[in-house]
Image 1 (cartoon, rainbow, N blue to C red):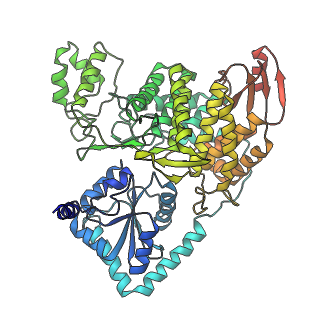
Image 2 (cartoon, rainbow, N blue to C red; image 1 turned 120 degrees about the vertical axis):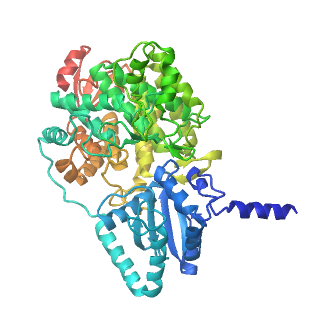
Image 3 (tube, rainbow, N blue to C red; image 1 turned 60 degrees about the horizontal axis):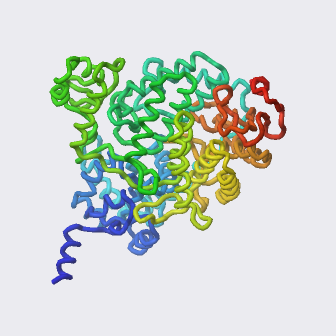
Length: 638
């Protein structure tokens, strides 16, 4: 009887090959009627043995359109039956396997001549040669064309009735992919007026009314903001200051920032930063506070400090495991509805604010309007100076949320993303020592949990199961975090580990740099959701070269910069992190001092601090000036 009950439970739940996974995204699909496999040899061998097509779906646990496609198609028994009969279906979490995702995003890009996204849908021959790619697909035929059901059956029909034609298409694309995936652009002599180029590019492409790059959707583009801060410090250009002030101000007061509990959403669907996509990603909430704090130091605008601290506090308090590492993201949806946790009905807030004599003023302050700004409801924005009763009103809005179901949090811990947060917490530690302590705590746990017996790992999920060895991005961002730790503490253990990892990282290099150790996906120069690992590595090598007077590392950095010279020369603001490396390679300093993180960044952006007697200023290959009078040191830098 017991065995029959177990069998019936298995049948009713329709568990597939993902059921034993510890990955939050894969587990979301474990009870789909689709017979999903994780990315594994068993799946590919099955496709070859049974001569079945491969249906590859790449997404992540907090992706709104991934959930939509799951509800519409992957929980649809009719579509599941087609997939199970004619295909071997594979699910990949792009956060756990960013190298696999990068490869197939390139497939999509080459097929469609535009960038892809998530969910990413790939159909391949049994030997893995792609023949079709798409992002989100509706389940059935609509005004947009064939749905998933029709596409699946049409491809099956083509393979059955025109096998030579399909094989020819697959082979032709394989050759086209091989010829174009790693196409190197010519190396160029970088213009001497590169700073002017960056300034002009910003003036041409930034929205001077609402900030950020023109067009929608609007992403914060933290790496570009970081570069513009450097440019402002060097040039004191007032037009760049205006661009940065508008951008930081509008985002801080807009709907892309969670005005009630803190933290940034992933992007805005409108030009005014008012209506966001409600995911909260760890990388945004590390990198945005970092640039906000840099700009606060230069402007002393308290709004920027407040926004940075509220974002960091939200993640420290809600997105952290018992060890002190940070979770990867939270969903836009709750109870199957996008933004449900975050938005407000006008009537519920109006009624709750009736106790205040300045009710209308408070409603206006939080942007609560009768017809709302998001599907008839209100995503709060800030529209004036803080009014009387502001704190009490904010508490009411927070209490309303407490009665709701908080969106799903992906509890996966990623080395690269945690390293970003470490760097941001150290930056906040310049203003409040408590954040420095949090940075050290996180970094120490990260090293302990992720660097095991001389092997660095990319991520772990529940039960601290280390599943995948580190990628280039994990090394690059961790080396940066370790150098930050040294600069802020002068503890040699962090610098020594950074040096050790900088030697180990060469396993990713053949003639070129690769994302993974198997050398299947080349690293590139594109700063997309966050800075390119290759670009960060170039900056790492330059910083280590300064701290250690290591000209070999500077040469390695220069080689990366030269490979990226076309992008630097032609699109510096769209390839900001490698452009930053170029500027740093031309003029950077190390300051020997008794004080960890001696505050010199507002004078010149490319100065690192090293333990020594106050004061001595050096470049990559020589020391320039030693003086107890710091003003004389400043003269050498400017």
